[in-house]
Image (spheres, rainbow, N blue to C red):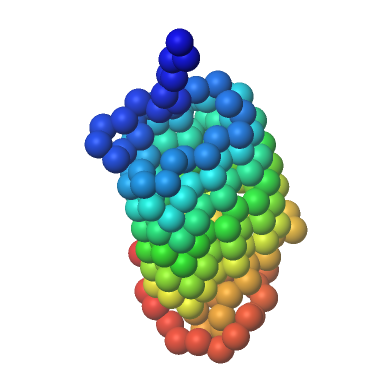
Length: 193
């Protein structure tokens, strides 16, 4: 007789804890949330794929997943929680889909291998310290839709350039923090937090 042991502990349609051992993890379609600390300290995970059914990535959900190099987030996620991917020291790039509206404080803090970030049009808030201590960061693309960038959200690292529309909050943030800026397209202004 074959017994199947689920890889996740669940509460309704929310994953509360990962109990599998796979290094490449795909969240099942139909799940709507990834709970706080659900994958915290899963050092062996190398890749994670989050389907469009997931709307919320909770606080510290993937924190300290030190082997994580690839994160694919499909459109559907609306909030990336506080410290959700902090200390994922092997993560090299991230694309935030346009369904996301808020990237909470410290979401990618201490991702020391992170070099490239693309934030898609739709995100309105980049919280405090979001990319703090991401010492390898070279390129951050920020759309016009971002109207709030929190303090210390983007570090001033050697070789970093912020790419954003001219006249945007991102341009003002870059200039206020003496970070090189590359204009992408003309646009209006928002407000800094």
